[in-house]
Image (cartoon, rainbow, N blue to C red):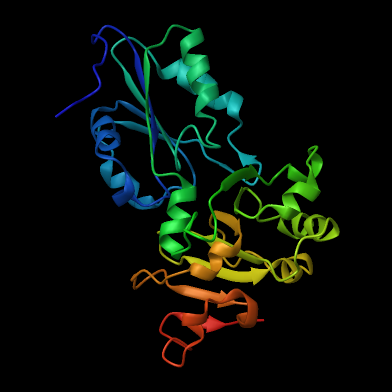
Length: 284
């Protein structure tokens, strides 16, 4: 079995580990091995409590998560990394999703490199992949979407964006950190010529207890009808691939809210057998 070679025990070592969408069973094997060797664990707030069962009893575990702009400042996380990365100490920075996809893993890696601290980066299942798989919405689909564009929605309205080009985009848009800005984004896209019936989906708590998928349209999102229904993390998808949504079996995260059945549902879901199926209810 291949395994990353660590420095000698006389050196500090840091593992930047992607924890996946939030549930422990989607952690990679290499990530689990790093956790089981860790002396100090700095973990994100968005992870499920069950992750604690994977920590060594002797390990010092410190929550350092950030939520909606609050929580632990990134500068303090940097200080903690430098403070605990001492000779003979293995530190794991356990990050939701993948460290290098809106996880600020690049900043932390640069910090460690600048201070001469050996480190490794262990990839994780990103929130993007988790949301797609858990909700059954493909990111690309033959004959429907051949492109995927990933954007950060928190500051999108403040950035210089070619909104006309974005409104014409025929592929799949994935918006991280956009649950609070999706109304403004939808309004801006409509103002630049986007189709009001263009499908939009908000997936919250992907692969975790209480997952909710809300399927809507740009017009309804622009009116403020697409809102969070949980306090967990969420990701917004836009595109015709939402029509191709399937229903993966899962007994505990199958709740779906549908704002506009006439335009947001695939034809197979409008069949008598599918209508009103287990785990779904119509809203709005």
